[in-house]
Length: 269
Image (cartoon, rainbow, N blue to C red; front, side):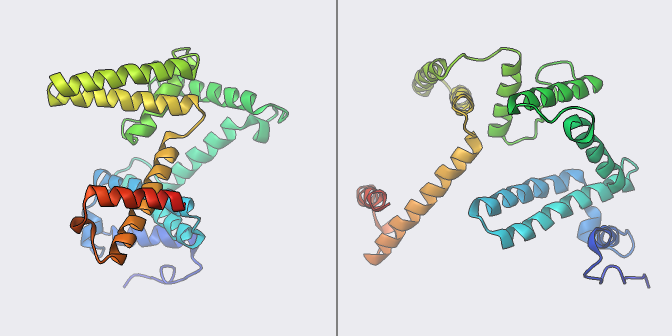
């Protein structure tokens, strides 16, 4: 029988969590589901947990955030356990690497550089350090290192920021808005004359430029879309509530009635 004192110790902290994961992955005595997982099968859960952390923050629910941060930490522990089993890395080497990176990227805090810099200068210094790191990884292209697995909207923003650093950018929002008009016209033309894959391509172009407009306006496109989603959810639920007062569900209503209720909900806000 294995010594499980640490596993059952509520004050065991991170060592307790690491040991729990080792037990779950034990080929002889662990959990069959956990044993059969690999990096690829766990990755979707990692992404999901990160979004649930963001959701708790958006809702201002600190009790929920505490739990979601624990779920996200578990994902790091899971991946490092698998990395150690395969001989790639350990939890200790992962934490050492990120600690080293933070120290190297903040010479004005942990080194001899002055902290008396503007936010713009600190950002420029940060990017210079990151560029040096990328060069050390043989990442020569401007867009090298922008993760393919990022959500598409976030990746679009990162690609645009990288291109802007080397001068490939519109000078103002005016040119971006002109491009949105151009791409909108091309999408309409594609809808009427081209096959579905070309329609998708033109739609993607329009989304890409919309993300760029957000960047030029100093907005986070992902945050803006989350707010729009929350607003739509709030208003549609209010429409459902008003329909329920009439003894109806949305499927028993029609667009004219629901659109009128939508306008009423907007006016009440």
